[in-house]
Every structure is written in C-alpha cells, then in structure tokens.
Length: 115
Length: 116
Image 1 (cartoon, one colour):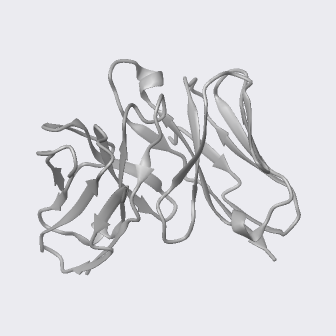
Image 2 (spheres, chains in turn yellow, blue; image 1 turned 180 degrees about the vertical axis):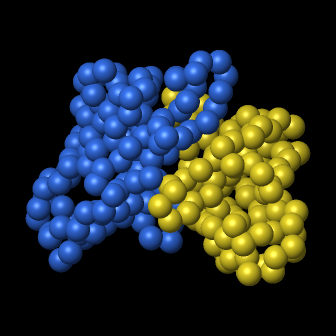
Image 3 (tube, chains in turn blue, purple; image 1 turned 60 degrees about the vertical axis):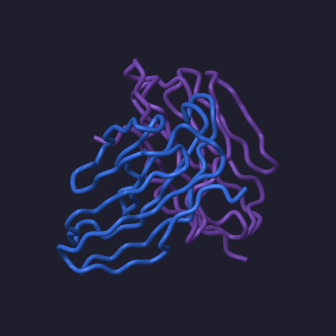
C-alpha cells in the first residue's frame, strides 16, 4: 500500500490563481481530511469527508472547496489564491472516527507559497 | 482560546537526558492522541489514551492520561537524536460536544531537539 499520497509536493502561485491539491489513499478509508499547518498555529482542519459524496467544513474553510466523488480521492481546490493561504497542507485518512477508534494517517504534505 | 495547551513550546536537550512534555485543557475528553512529526513529513500517531489515569509505554516513551481526562503527559527516557521532532497532542471534539462531529483538534505542539 502507498498509504496517503499528495501531489504536488511544492507549488508556487501568484495571487488570484487557482489550483487543486490532490490527495489519494489506497486503504479504503471512509474518512478523509485536509489540514493546514502554519508556524505557531499548529494543524488546523480545513474540510473533511465522512464518505463519498459527503463533506463538511472544519475550522478554517474559507477560500477552499472540496468534493469527494470516490472513496480514494479527496482534492482541495483554491479558487483564488491569496498570500494568507501560504502554508503546508496535509491530507489525512482513517477507517473510522480518528481519535476515538482508528488511526489517522497523514500524507507527506504540499508546501504552497502564494506570492 | 486554545483548546489544547502544550508546553513547553520548544525544548532543546542533550542526548541521554530525560524530558516531559505536557498537553493541558480545561475540557474533558473521551480520548487523546499523541503524534510525532519529523521535519518535512506528516504527523505519525504514537498512541491513543482513553481511560483516566491510563499509562502506556512505547519503548522509551511513557504516555499518561490524567485522572480527570483533561490533560496528558509524554515522558521520554534517555532521549536520542532520533527523538527530534514536533510532538502534537490531539483530541476528537466528538467527545466534547457529542453528536456525530468528527473534528480532530491539535495543540500547537512541542518542538523537541535532541543534540548528540
């Protein structure tokens, strides 16, 4: 198993550009999440999904869209990038309710810079 | 207000020393997790504690969940350079607010550096 994969690993955008961060998992996990990690702020939840076709907002959802058309994939879309979205983005997945019964597995991250 | 307060924020020690880092809250949780994140990598789960007063050991790492399930500590014995990383505690807010909420909330972490 490859686990949780993320592409790209690094990305530089100009303000106003759009892009999609890709996340895929091959563990048949129902739950997938997107986090951003900023210095001094820790990991903050952006959006999450409890299964194909079901998504919900996390702590910092503004400026980001998600969809979950398959169990395996959970892309994160930035519609109009802003410098405040410069961060490291992590995708994670778990079989069940992470923190209660199951382990949450994280991808290697995407380092995004918005100029 | 930060739900989970981790201390210290930074810790730099020499190889062989012992250390303890803390994760505190005023809220009660049904479970708490500890993760380690190495530079350039995603966090990796170390342990989940679910019972008040519970102690779990993972080689040289000892994790304790407070009796009241509001806090936790991580003790490392004879630290090694390979222990260097960001140690994060996390809780699922489902235990706090009930319902079917699925939101894993992290503390800001303790950045540990173990010097050879």
